[in-house]
Structures are given as C-alpha cells and as structure tokens.
Image 1: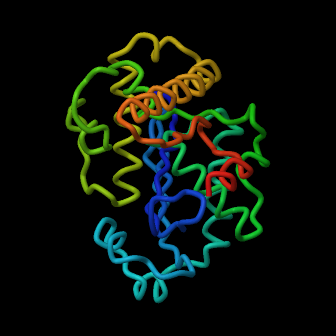
Image 2: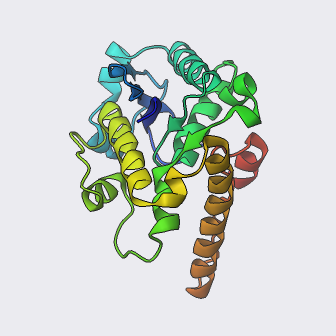
Amino acid sequence: MRRLAAFDIETTGIDCASDRIVTAAVTLAGGGRPLESHAWLVDPGIEIPAGATAVHGVSTERARAEGRSPAEAVEEITMLLADQLRHGVPVIAYNARFDLTCLEREAERHGVRPLVDRVGGDGLLVVDPYVLDKQHDRYRPGKRTLGAVCEHYRVRLDEAHAANADALAAARVAWRLAQTFAEIAGADLPTLHARQVLWAAEQAASLEDYFRGNGRDEVVERAWPIIPARLAAVAA
C-alpha cells in the first residue's frame, strides 16, 4: 500500500461555500511507514448550530475556549496537504467536493494561499471513495454515507464524525475499492484523478435528471474535487 494523505473535516453546516471548519484531520498512512495523525480543533468565529454539535460533538463554547485561530489552522492544513501532493502522495477524502471546497473557501476567507494555488490544477491528486463506489457499484440500493459504505466493504470505522476516525476510514475504503475493482487498481494516479472528474460530473447529471423526473427543479454541482469560487458564488 502506497503512502496516502487521508483528509476529513467536520463543520458548522452542509454549505461548503459559507460554513466553517470546526475540526479537521490529516492522517498519513501506508508506504511502509508509521501512521502519522494530525488533528485540529478550530474556533470557526461563528456560532456552531445545535444540529452540527449533535453530529460532531463540538459546542460553540468549547470551540471558543480550546479552538485554534481558523487562519492558523487552515494555513497548517493546506501547507501539509500541499507538501504531500508535491511528493506524489494522493489526498484521500470521502465526498472530496465538500471537504476540499470548504477548505478552499476558508483559505480565501482568511487570507491563506489556497491549495490549488500552491500545487496547480495539475498537481491535484485526489482519490474520492464516494465517487469511486458510486461509479463501480452504481445500482446498489441504500445509503452512500461513509458509515454505510464502511459497513458494505467491511471496513472498521472507530468513531463516526470524528475527523481523524473518518479520515482513516476513508483511506481504508479506498484501499478496499482498489482490491475489489481492477479499473481502480490498474490506473495511475493522474489517470484516476481525471476519470473521477468525469465520473463525478456524470453522477451529478444523473442525479439532476432523477430530480427532474420527480418534479424537483434542483441543480446538482458537477465540479470536482473543488468547486471554483465563481461557481460557488453563483450557487449561493
């Protein structure tokens, strides 16, 4: 198993353009080297809704008392991911579109140089088990949450919605997918990344068609793994 940089965040909500990071984790695993975990608790600078606290367990009071400055945390997270990417280590993120876009918007919000600017579009090497699972087992019924996918592939998830546990689980699912589907295992990282760009767009278009067929006039984001700022602004 090659070296992987598993990334996950927990946030104040589900809008990657406006919601803020509360916890984050980057877990470096594989490559014949020891597991290396990095974790951040962040003061998002806004109230954390009760619904979000119920998911990840961090209250506004705790974040204010114990959390890092968002600018400092986002700088450290982005710098670490960029360093791994420059060394050819892929970023593993479950539903990467949300996590990486949220990180990008936070960087812009706090005057931090964004990840794309540091590595360039061609420098992104992202593996998204969510996109891969939907592509290679598209007709499986049931939910596609990380917990459900871990259960399907018999991957251990120690503590759902703890960023470090979710990050490691995503890396384990990515490894299991590569063991299960030859198309994933046989592709080099740039090729796999490029295929996911296409697959994510196709999946979004398919979901949008489904909504239309059920009378729901909803637009589903096609950009992956990061929604450009201009598109996020239009959507908002």
